[in-house]
Length: 505
Image (cartoon, rainbow, N blue to C red; front, side, top):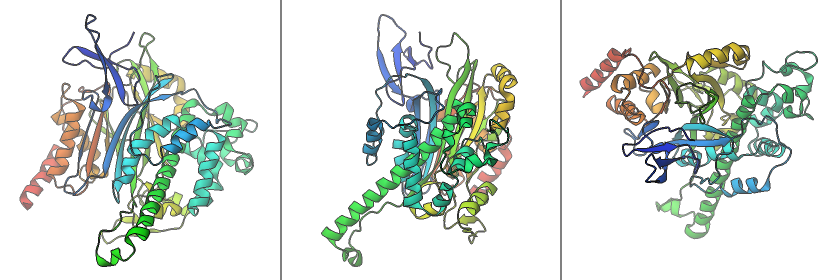
């Protein structure tokens, strides 16, 4: 028996049968007419909506993505060997920009994902992430061989920052999972972070008995996402290098270098990067008679894991219509970033003519791509932010049982019955505060409105106030959709801003 996640006007109901990574199956409610076909969840306006505008720029480098991953969330062990078939598949995909096609059925737990990518220096990197990131999170095998391959690539091919990072690999991976102040030595009960065994270069973190006994599957999922982000960054850098080498070779032997001196068309060289905010949502508690346990259903408690690289943001609207920033921008002014770069790289933070801090000539201290800044620490390491969302009663009960551990690993919550999640590029947040994003949605959309309509309202406001960057807004409907109070906390602020624009024109 399936539980529906939506009904169309034609009386068709869609179910969660896996066909492709973005697809759900639609079946007719009429038993005499057994119609069934697939629908892309990105085209299901009742549950997910997006809007993207180039605003006043000649092109749009932003991208967005959604998918349903098939994940075994019981795994908490690094494997010994890598399957050659999976290795070959991912390697074969390095030079392909098409989105992956999946044919496997769901064998494990469904993990919903929604991502926004903000490209710079061209749209190649953000387009590449759209085609490869979710695929790698789902398919990359976390083995000793995989981890060693990645670490050696960054240490030898990139160097600089990564050479120093590599010397503290165990500590860095432990902190990436948020367990630096959680895991303790089995014997002394002291923090493992301060133990000599952690700093033994001959012993890997996952080989320690403390890893096997204390790391949970949820912690291990963070490690999987962390390594997958680095792997996709490696894939793009490899693709970029191969593309540029091929094109340069063609110029040298066919056109010749003199073309650049005579004004003839020059070859295109890829030198781009992208930020990313990616939200993973999966069920941790549901009613026994619920076969699915989707995050937007009643009586379901879910875990929301946000992985951020750069300054694209995740904003949560709680049941009271209050905005909560789920992420923090990776800018030079961020104390965490300042300490990271000072510790592992050179102090290259400077102030531009507008008084804004920059790292080299970049506004972001983390990104995919950006090969010229990779050796000084502009990395694709995601920072994680972990939350509980969903049914308030189940949340209260879950916290009573697991509250101490949740606080230790940094999991937060806002009371349940959250209304929606917004993923936005900096073209939105440069023009709007987090609360304004929420208020624009709640003041223009009711329970019958769709996330698509809500996202469009946000983009329209950015265009109206004269935004100067691409603006992308993705809205994920949560179980409290439409239940927000009719309170517009930033109405006067927005009206003043629009009035200033009219007065200037």
